[in-house]
Image 1 (cartoon, rainbow, N blue to C red):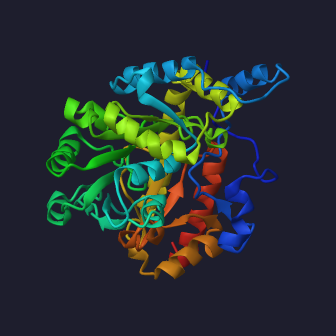
Image 2 (cartoon, rainbow, N blue to C red):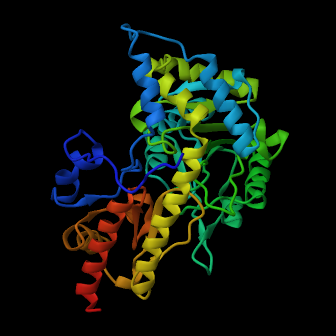
Length: 394
């Protein structure tokens, strides 16, 4: 069976966040929103069908996450990513950000330092600050080809006895890196030397472009497994964020018990029965759909790159290895961050994430979500091309 990504259902009259907030965030309902990291691509029919079948039972009450749901996730992670988890390692969570918040509470105290590597997904900042921890900013280093890597020397110079936790984004949002084993091993060595726990956000791990391969941090070694809290789930891969279900994998029993103490204070419970069904269906039946989605996303990325090449002295597309989030280097446009945002919203009629929201290293950049249907991608390209052509008279 071949899946069709050429078009998708309209979200204009739904309560979709990216559409309902357009006026508030961009000052106009005319912008095409390509900011929030969910997809304007239909959630797979096999997931929706599984939910419909469950709704034939007339009671939707409290239920435990079924063992079968975690079992298919364990199988997926082993087959796709080469990391083995056990049932006892896994906990339900409604989101990666919620899991991150619990990890910060569990493995640090007020005033302790937590490492974030900028530019980074904004909740990394917010979660640390809201827990009254100190942000230890370890900016990524941009290489000559535009890609980013870790600044190991900077990290070594900043870590001290009060540094308790590292928030790793792998694959990275927004710069799209799939970290190599060597890069991850350097991070591991620093964390082992300084007794730092690693919270590894791997929610984009299924959206990787060949020849790159995601390496789960916990898969590097036994020592890595013992210091890692891994956050994973189906929300990004299958456009299922609205089901509010992910999981946390912790193989070290002592870390798991400590995490659970904070986790229980929040009362996560077990989530929604419909989420359990959708989660299980995605992992059980979604392999081919995922593969074809990644192929489709690659085509969208190629189209965007071709446009950027046309205006390469003004706007550059940072090479990415994973995710559906394009990191646009707009510094060649010589605009302030405010004017850059105005250009996209008022001239191109596109709603993007401002790079500055990912940290000061994002100044001059914009993030564009290209996880849309073919028809919508053509409209994104059309609008941006027209705005650039008018501005630069090309």
